[in-house]
Image 1: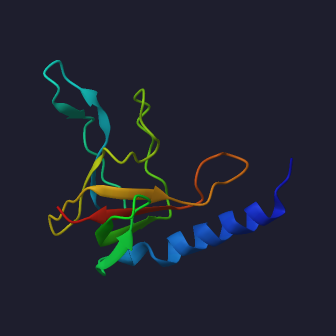
Image 2 (image 1 turned 120 degrees about the vertical axis):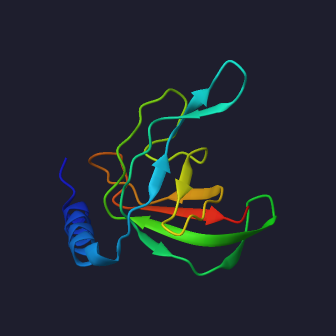
Image 3 (image 1 turned 90 degrees about the vertical axis):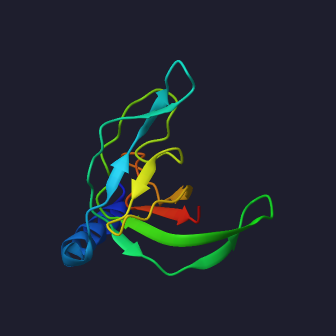
Length: 132
């Protein structure tokens, strides 16, 4: 099945990736892979993808009605490589650990993005990091 609009979105994302390359710093992504026998969270070897970082702080309301401080929003125009560990959401799971270039790390509040109907993967990915 052909998705002409999806082709336009893919082209737009590729252009956005190319034109924002100079403002996409490298981050450290440690993907959750499970727990060891003592219950300690384990991560895969870190990867270093690029993304646009918006560090404007703002408040959002969770689905449970709780106020949450968003410290940074990361936009990936090229999706990080999936890890493949059982039980995780790919390519970024809320249990993953992200460290920004300035050393900030916070819990992953949400991972969102419009799905490409041809691949069932995101065209782009938006990740919100909260306060610790």
